[in-house]
Length: 176
Image (cartoon, rainbow, N blue to C red; front, side, top):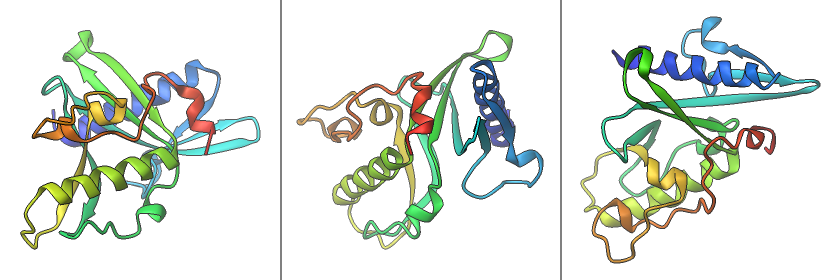
């Protein structure tokens, strides 16, 4: 599978979950290719919400999920608050084909901004300044708020700002 297919699978899985909960959901990418800032619009009565979906197949127990955002070597992320327009749903695909299972982790807009900002600041401090831009990724353990070990020398040393596992916390999409 290519990245576009993986992304579409994640968006479709999230749309199906939203529909199962009785909320209307539309994939914005069906109307405008690669819609900026959001993949889905969800409607619950008079409330609407733009949702970004990030999908990762299971390349390991703690995959690094790309955000599509770039940091300069000093840690500045251009227009972060404008680019994160609503909550994000992270989809972790376990397995392949018809036996695949999906785990959903939901973060509010503010949680996404805070997680990206603090993890990027931490990461930039760990790296030597190469003068090159950095593609921002979030490890699944950071999204889940687990895996912190103060003495670790790798990504486990970052203390996530997420304090409660957001798995299947669908109500969080309305908390922005």
